[in-house]
Image (cartoon, rainbow, N blue to C red; front, top):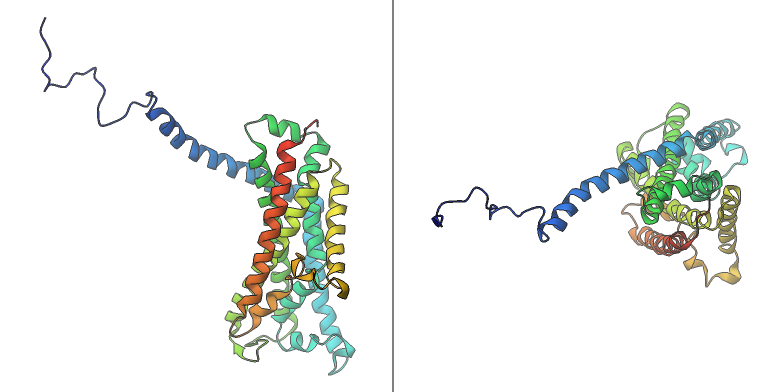
Length: 313
């Protein structure tokens, strides 16, 4: 029997430079590389499906329309009040700022919407995120598909935050457009007294809008937690909105001043620091850090509840 030459490659021998994908050593690595793009695509498909579900609900679209209408009405009201006389008909002190530069209508609308209207619309979407699926009987079918509870919870949170971004953006853009139509525009006088170009004012408005969205992320996380505690969507929406209102009331009680720095509503209006020159970033950073802490706690509680609850519907 002839012995094959060691220098001649055997056609049946595996190539030493490429690991056998079926071997125990190469199998997990190869399969892991194949799963990562597939998992990412699956997450994106799930997020697109969730956003389509959120935006297909007529109630959610109506709420966006109401925010646009309220912002437009604020601008019309300021215009009518300013026509009554130089004092703006005895209106609020920011009327003069808005009538001098229409861009400030967007800031005024965000300031007016943040305490009540924006948290309310986010509470509705967040409260319905999990409880709505359970109420409709679709949550169980979602979980029997290859979607684990952690991924599902993350997608629900991201979709709610994206809706919050749409709501804040609707207020800002409407404020800009109505301000252009009703009031003069030009260089922006910042809160520090310095003047900035209109383009820089738009950039600062974008930063303020992003800050508002960050504040609403806590409401989204709170609503997600409440939504995992019940199968009644209306109860989850109402409870989330009530908690937000109660926390704001607590922030106005002088006897609870020791608690105020820890309330998640404490830093909501710190975006005024973004309208100074230079930007007073201490207050903004403190507000963002406070929200991050609350989001971590609320999401962790929602995850603990979601991964341990018995889904019967």
